[in-house]
Image (cartoon, rainbow, N blue to C red):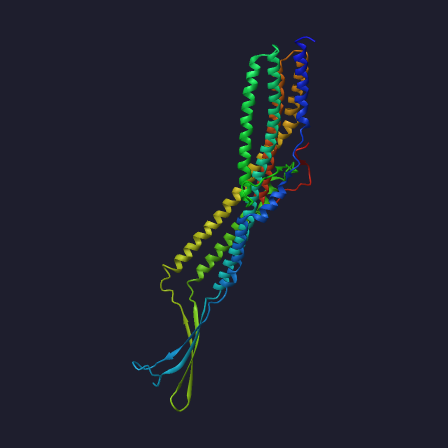
Length: 434
C-alpha cells in the first residue's frame, strides 16, 4: 500500500465514523415535561400563595362593609349637683342609660357591600391572572432550557467531529499528505467551539436558576432535560381567540369588575349628600324618697351636609373621574389583548413555517450535500475540509431547528396566557419528532 493510500484509507474510515456516530449517540433518559414544571409552580410559588391569602382576606370585607355600625351604649349620671357631686337634685337621674344607633341613608350599606364584593372578585381575578403570567414566564424559561440543551447537544456532536478532524488533519500532515492550514484551522475551530459550549452551559445555569426561583427552590437545584411535548400545529381563528380572551382572561375580568366597582362608588358618592340618621333610647331613674321614678327618652338626629361643596360634591366628582379611568383601562386592556394575539399568531406562523421549511427542505438538502461531498471526496474531487464543512452546516441547521421549535412552544404558551385557556390539542400536533 502506497504512502498516499494509507492516510487516505484512514481518512475515509474516519469520515464514516464521524458522520454515523452522531446518529448513534443516546440522549439522557432524565427528562422533564412542561406540565410537571407547571404543577410545581402551582404548588410552590410564594407569590400565588400570597395573592391567594390576600383574596381570602378580601372576602371578609364584604359582610363588614354592609353591616350597620356598632351601637353605642352609654352609662352615667345626669344632672348631678356641683361642686358636691350629689344626685339629690330634682332633675338628677342615677343611673342614666343611653343606647344610640347610627343608620346610614337607605342604599349606602348595600353599595358599600357591593364595592367590597367587587374588590374580592378583583382579588380572585388577580390570583388567576398572576397564575397565567407566571405560567408564561415559567414556560418561556422551560423552552429556553430546551433550546439550550438541544443546541448544546448538537454543538458537542460538532465538537467531537472537529476533534476527529483535527486528529485526521494532523495525521495527514505528519504523513506529508495534508496541509498545515488544515491543522491550524482545526485547532482554531476546536478552541472556538469549546468556548461556545462553555458559554451555552453558563447560560443554562442562569436560566435554570431563574426557573428555580419561580419554583421557590434553591438556585442550584438540577433541572432535567426538558422535552418539547406535543404542540398544536394550528390555532383557532383570530376572532375566536379574541372572544375566548373576553370570556376567560382574568385581567379583562378584573378590569370589568373595576368598572362595576367604580360605578358603585359613583352611586355611593351621589348618595353621600343625603343625611345619615341616628336613633337613640335613654332610660333614667331617681329616688326622691317617695319611691323610684323611672323616665325614658327617644331621640332622632341626622347629619347636616353643610360642607357639601368641598366634601360630598368633591367625592362625587372624584368617583366620576375614577369611573372614566376604569372604563378607559378596560378599553385599553381589550385593545392590548387583541394586539398581543395578533403578534403571537404571527410569531407562531413564522416559527411553524420555518420549522416545516427546515425539516422538509433545508436540512434534507444539507444532508444531500454531505452525501454528495462524501462521494466526491472518495474520488478525490473535493478536499476533506469541504466534507467537514458540509456536515457542520447540517449540525448548524439542526441547532437552528431546535431554536425554532422552542420559539413555537414559547409563542403557544404566551398565547394561552393571553386568552386565559389552553389551546385544543385534538388536531394535528407539532412535536420534536416528525
